[in-house]
Image (cartoon, rainbow, N blue to C red; front, side):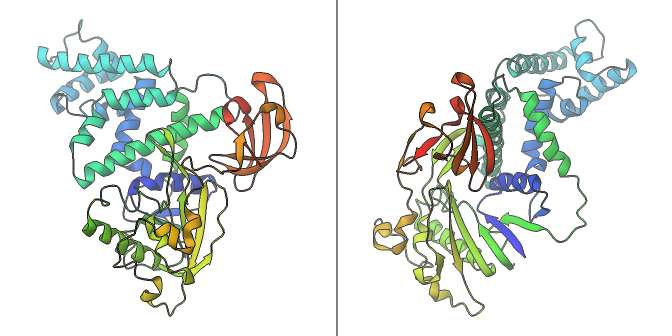
Length: 416
């Protein structure tokens, strides 16, 4: 009965994580779960090997990815030697200079280069935070370059998934910091967190009563009572690549219509005000497609100052496509936000933050103060604990619930 639709597969991660945290069963339709996608598993294998060089499964998965000339025969000989000596493949590689493994000098040289690369990552992984370590690994292995060079749809999708993984690490660090963690948040800690998510992918798919999550393309021909359209914002939907071509933009517009009409009872359209992009929190602009919907079909135009603005459009069983206006054929106008009733969907300012806010002075925060947070939205301070660098606010957020936030990291703003 419920479906979440998005433009690109990379957007599934945040919904998968949210549904898992709430123990809500779901199914990724037409694709693999985020953490089961090849590029994600390859990247996490690099993280695992960096933190634990004795992880033979991780080593075997990525020793020749990206291609570095280490073939199947070389790996088999390394594995055979490791089994004979009852040791890890990593230790076997360490001993290549003093042990006759039967490998040719060229093969030994390539394996040694791989070994030295992982050793460098190991040093970085325990001296920098998880995000910086992950970014260093992704760049220096050559994975990022390989995906960028591949201009195919598949290559672009892989690149988007890698960006999603980096964003998840940044979110993990920011969340830990705001909750009072002051020590280095290393890559090993992130791996402990993500292991819970990857383990959940092994759950048996016996329960058919699940939330369906999928791309809008995958939803063609399907219908659900309640549909949530996520990420309906500029550069995401329509995509950045389509905005320069009238034909491609029109195709995006048709896809938006298809997505809305997957709902038999209710379609909820949402967009973020702020979004992580390659680890940086940036503002977002609602999609031009939202402003093209005939106001007659908007059930609720009330827009809050929360990070996620939601607008609900309802259609009955007798829906006439023309009731959605001319958005199926009309190109967007530059001043469309000025001329339509939906102008309030435009973010309040270029930062995607409420206009009537100011950066919170710790001394001014007290019980009952109304505040705003980029990720958690609006809330009320319930109490202030400790002082100075250790000052912490207990905030009850409208949608995120109660959070204990270390004020020097939380970046709360007082609502006027």
